[in-house]
Amino acid sequence: MIPLSGMRVAMVVGDVVGHGIQASATMGRLRTAVRTLADIDLAPDELLTHLDDLVVRLSAEAGGEGSPGEVGATCLYAVYDPVSRRCTLARAGHPPPIMIRPGGPPEHVDLPAGPPLGLGGLPFESTELELPEGTVLALYTDGLVENRDRDLDASQRLLFDALFAPSDSLNETCDRILHAVLPPGGAADDVALLVARTQGLPAEQVATWDIPADPSLVAPIRKQVVEQLDAWNLSEAGFTAELVVSELVTNAIRYGAHPIRLRLIHDAATLICEVSDTNHTAPHLRRAKTWDEGGRGLLLVAQLTQRWGSRHTTDGKTIWAELSLFDEL
Image (cartoon, rainbow, N blue to C red):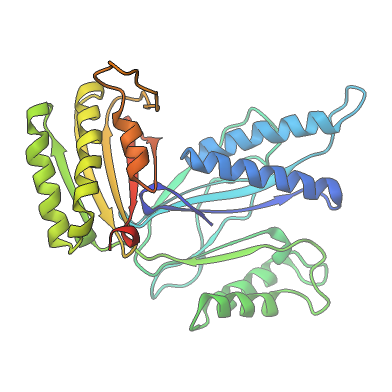
């Protein structure tokens, strides 16, 4: 699992073709690539496209005398947003995840299969689901259910039964699945299993404002932010948050495109400030010269916050910054 901006989380499971040192090295390179691509907040289908390109290059490098090597992999990548309670998924030749909505039976997520990684040039498709609070998702590799002594349907039934049985913890669920589905002598293939339960962020921990395209109104917006932090009993973070919001909102008004929106999100440990606009150009840090009147805003944000960044959206971009509440309290 990989933490993303906006308190979202990415879940990924993959499987490399083959065994041995080369397969392990390929998995290591793909794992590093996934984390790098996740950091720049690519959509699941875009991330798989970049992974596909990487596997194609790895195949070319593994080949000899003009013939490509046999490097291939499957992957399932999902991003869950606790604010919207929506999950976006895409897969590349990987088994579909299993979903259990509260009070419902286990079911496979209806998700386009996509080609395995390494074929090159074929499209991937994302699916977005709204997941009620407490929905369980199970991601796994085919080594879990493929058994020489049992057909696939029988293994799937065992997996569904083990997932559906009442459990006090997800660790207990994973242990029960492995004991129920794997043969006594152990699996013939590598096995990976990831089980997660969704937990949405309460609406009262999110505040949103539409920002007018008027720099003179930044001061009233700062005041509203301070009042909201007081209502959340986060007054200690008010000074830093006020400066960060001021810089991000001012930049969006000057260089972004309308509509502009400010969003604050918090949990027990983190306060997140997000400013979204419809300009797709991402900002970057630059060192302002002595007599420059601007150019210091993002540098100030970087110095004041735990981390910051930008992510592209379907409508433009979002600039975000995280403040650690432990440092403020």
